[in-house]
Image (cartoon, rainbow, N blue to C red; front, side):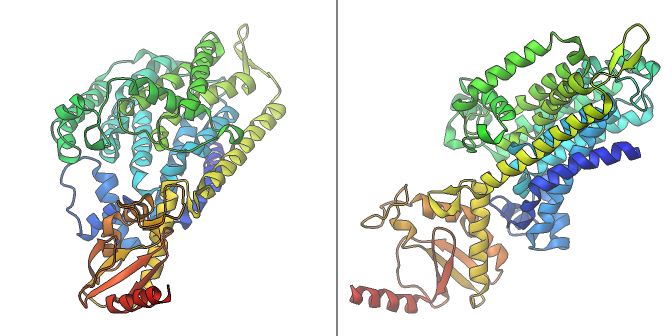
Length: 529
């Protein structure tokens, strides 16, 4: 990168660091323990290409370097995000003014929907997939032999996560709809622009499309059945066992699409009412308004020339792979689509703040005036950053029913796992221990935190939440190798001498007690009553 490009790209990326740096202070959460366990040999290693980089290779590399310290893993996610921001800025700055690129890249860097992607280590596949995808797009735009680097870069993207499987269509859209370079943008010439525009279909694009087709065939024929279930059964019964990748071809299509689009445009603090990962009808009107506004923008030649059309098409192509999912929709699915949305934001900033060409002489007219335009761009980037930080803080600290718990499941379960870890680290666990997790408190709490007269007949949410945070005990066995087995029980019963009861609270604070000692405590409490 040239020094000016590097400086402004760094500003946009720095805004993302300012907003999301607190992720470095959190523990592992949920599926993170699967990655750690595969690297440690507690779970079978992945033997297929499906998400191999994100779900196996990253953990293989990081575990010897970082061990069980979570912050280096979170740092890797933050670095991957910084790379995506800087790559996106460079792409924008090659076609638009630096101030428009700064606003667009900052919008992407600090968007509140990226919360889980930066806090949950297991979603690093989304970040790596976009980083490799942007590099592949950049390589495919070259006119020399280095353009063939797009092929291995696309392969790396697919090995990270299949979310960018439609990248060949994005490359085609870029070639057909790419913004016209702003007059004075460094590194652009009329001859180069004309040559690139004339090259729509070539061997690189054909190879990218062939690779995408091969991956889709592999995923349908082998990966889906291995990791999720029989594809035919899922299509005929979309709700089958609640599989995360169950497909649906009904109302979920437009509901998911409107939800994702609504989340894209509903990012300001006053508009944010909830942050749950489910279809959200409340944002549908915003999604419809966004579609109407985007269509209206197509009537502006200047917006079209600045990337408005390309940005909308890229958003749709990056979002399409997750639209058919029947059982859930997550905010972090927007990681790649937001790169397209950022182009629309940058196009709007270019329309307002960029130099205006004078057709008669072919030179740029001053427009608003460079100092004033830069002031507005800087203010816009600052407001986006402040808003992102405020929404992030709200999402991070919003309580869920009980004051110690958090509304974000990723944050909540990271905190629970960390509290359990600290409690067990202070206990004297002999080798070969079987831990029996039991919570007389969690079993007697109702859905709204009310105390029941007697333990609930089935597992309560509060019990299931702790069990999910510990991945059914896998996290404990990973963190404490001397623990031979973990069981979750709902009532006390005498146990062997190698057993210990882990008596926990809903927020994860845990006490370790020998069975005979706990039995004495229970008897004493009963006698006191």
